[in-house]
Length: 228
Image 1 (spheres, rainbow, N blue to C red):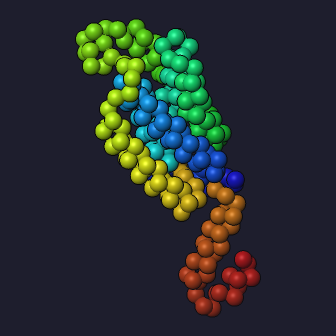
Image 2: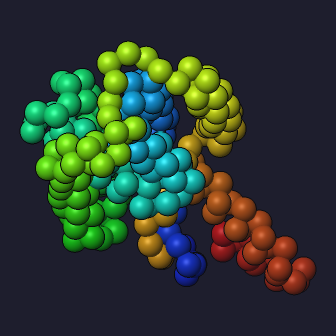
Image 3: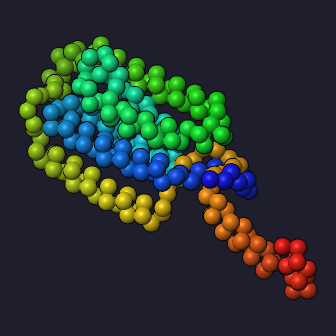
């Protein structure tokens, strides 16, 4: 990867490596499986957490930095829930899948603004943990007030599960096609700098040189060619 200066624009875009784009795709699969399980057994707080993971991953793939932060915050809540005794151990695996995109993106983020990157990680960690602790403290009160939100121990909502699965399959298929076409995703992190592949940088320079040559008067073209 090469750090290249670009003309001032409203955003900076970082071209993600394939492993980061893949981690976002894998996260969506993990979150989708968690979502289906949670709908089936009426774990509605977990449904919310899985949806936040999916929304964050989709946002990150569309160039939104807050998407990476959202996935990290939602991911932290899963192992935190296990740590305080209100969730099974496999929640830790969901947390790992949700944290990997941020870990892979942290270096380019920190290259632009290290302080903001640390702050983002801290806010996501504190926020996710606070949500898990708050739910433990209020869960029984919520269930008493709204009995329909109580978790069940047998699978339910077959029609809702089928509809959700159909939507997930459509989204995953669409994103898979987009990944093959685009070859990478972009994350927006600021102004003035972008990280690009060295090959892309060379192609961009050649294109710029060609455009400059078209703008040069014919009598100056030989001299310009020698300088280039």
